[in-house]
Length: 448
Image (cartoon, rainbow, N blue to C red; front, side, top):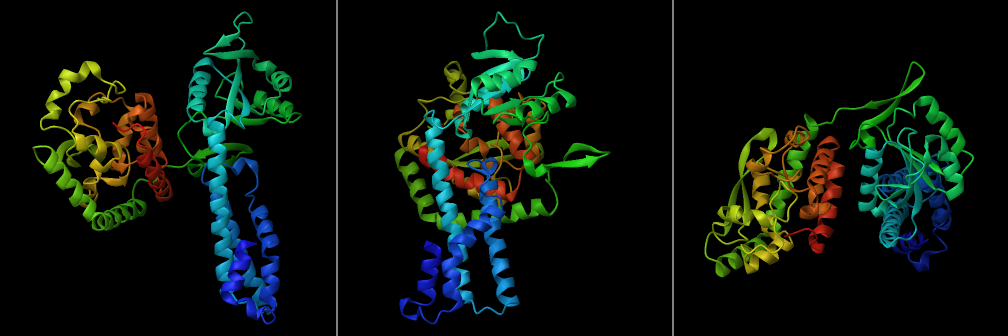
C-alpha cells in the first residue's frame, strides 16, 4: 500500500488523480496483486522463513515475476499503465517487504536467544551423532529448535538409563511416533543410522503424517548447502547428486576481479582512516607502523601478510613464555588480556582495524576479501587431513570464522567452518559474509 501510494504521488501528483486512468486502478490493485505474487512464489511457506537466503530470494523472484506479468498484460490488452509508476512501485514494494522481513527475522532470533518461540525437537540416531547435533543446535539457537530428548537404537537403549549427554532418553527407534504424540513434538531430526534404512524411514514418515511433527533427515555428507545438492531419479530411485565445488574457471576469475576492484576502492575511500591509524600507532609505541608476518595461502604458498602493529616490538618472540596462559583453542594462540598489546592496539584489535592493511594483500593477489583465516606455518604443521581443504582457495580478510565467534570458537568449530566455506563458495555467499562482518566488527565479540 505504501509503495503504491508513494509511486502514484511521485509519478502523477495529487492534482492528476482524475487523469491517471489505468494507473489509478493498478495502484489500488497493487497490494492484492503483490500478496498473490508472493504466495505464488511460495514465500509464505514456513520452511522458507526466518533462516537463510531462500526467503529473500523468493520475494525477489515474486517482484521479477510481477514486473514481467504487468508488462505482458499491459501490452496484450493495450492498457495505458504508466511505466514510470510500475518502475517505482514494484521495486519499492520489494525493498519494503525485504526490510520488513529482515526486521521480523531479527526480532524472532532475539526471542529465540531468550528461550521463546522454539520448536520442541527429538533427535533420532546414534549417540555420537546426537551429541554433535545437540551441541550445534544449542550454539545456534536462532534456528529455533529446543531439543527435549532423543531416541536411540535398541542396542544402545537401556530403560534403566534415563539420560544421555544431558538429554532425556525417551525411547528406542520403534517408539519415535509414540514419543511425538506423548510430548507434542514439533520436529523429529533423524541422523544417519543403519537401523533406519529406506523401508524403516518410509514407515516413520507415514506414522508422523498423522501428527503435526515435521521430519528432518540429516545427510551422511555434512557441510554441503542446497545449491550443490540435487535429487535425481535413477532407475526409479531418488538419489542425491552432489555437484563438485566450483573453485576454478570463470567463477574464480570473477571472484578475483571483484576482490581487487573492491579492495582498490576500499583503500581510496578509507585512505584518511588508514593514515590516521598509522599516525596513532607511530606516536604511541616505538617501532614500525606495519607488522609483517608469514602466512600460508592458496596451494600452501606462503606470503607476507600486513597488519597495523598492535603489540610491542618483538611480541612474536614472547609467545613461548606465555604459552601456559593460552586462551585459544589448543592450536591457535590467543590471550584475552595479552600484556604485549599496546593501548592503541587494544582498540584497533577489538574493531579489527588492525587488519585494514590486508586490503593491499588483496590487491596484490595474496588474499581475498572473503575466505578462510590465513594460518601461520606452525599451525599448518598441526593440521589434519580435512583442514588442508582450505588451501584450495585464498585466505580472506574476513570469513565465516570472523562472523561466527572468532577467537571464542573451538578448534573443531574452526575446522568445520573453514571446510564449509570451501565446499559452498559463491559470490552470493561472499556478499552475505561481508554484510555480517559489519555487525561482528561493531560488536567486537571474540576479538582479542
